[in-house]
Structures are given as C-alpha cells and as structure tokens.
Image (cartoon, rainbow, N blue to C red; front, side, top):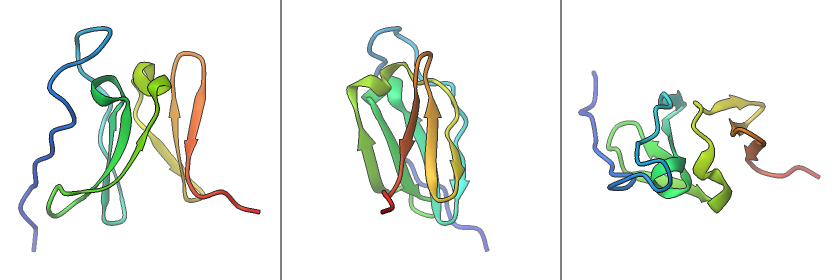
Length: 92
C-alpha cells in the first residue's frame, strides 16, 4: 500500500532572491531528494514514507543552485549558474 505523506520544513524564507526553490523533488530508492539550496543552503534526503530527514549536505555556495538534482553512478549532481556540484562517496 501507499504510505502517508510526511512533511519537512527546509526553511521559512529564501535568502538572497526572496523566492523559494522551484526544483522538482526526485525519488531515489527510499529517499526523496530535496534541493533546499535557496532556503537553507542544503540538499536533503528524506525518508519517502515519513518525511524524516535521513541526510543533509550543506554549503554556502549552494544558495544559487536552483535546478533539480540528478543521480548517476551513486552520486548526486546539482548545477548552479557557474558550477556543477557532486555529492557522494569518494572512491579510491
């Protein structure tokens, strides 16, 4: 069956531009990935059943990364106007 939708608050307001992120949520396995870069300079992984935060990656430079994240080879990618960010485990 379908679980109930959870709720998570990424922040109360935008920082520089005064509007929130317009990126789409993406689902990867049991996670819903949220680009909360504008609101809280973070990308978050939420449990898709409960909405509870499972992980968070933070960086001040993420604030201007408005796009929808993409996942490839177990890494999460997010593009800003100038940079391509990668979040994931490093490999030797």
